[in-house]
Length: 97
Image (cartoon, rainbow, N blue to C red; front, top):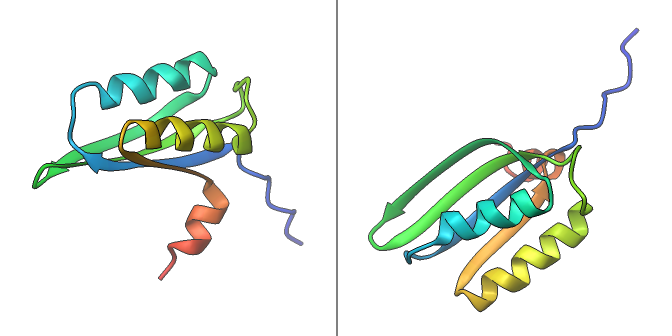
């Protein structure tokens, strides 16, 4: 008999946009402010476009996932960036082959 799957407290954050100074500093600073722990991070610049994907732990966070997603989306738009925050389970389901 299998036990029910424990729900993950992890989320995937993606950041896309034209490269500019301070993107990583802004995102990581905001996450630190909300006590979101970064577990893994990868970023690159492709033909002038900044791309970053992060796996984060929301367990110690002071903001719930929906509020975090809304905040980063709005602030990212102001900076010309597309920032998406998705629960790990939803991200995995949407990107399975």
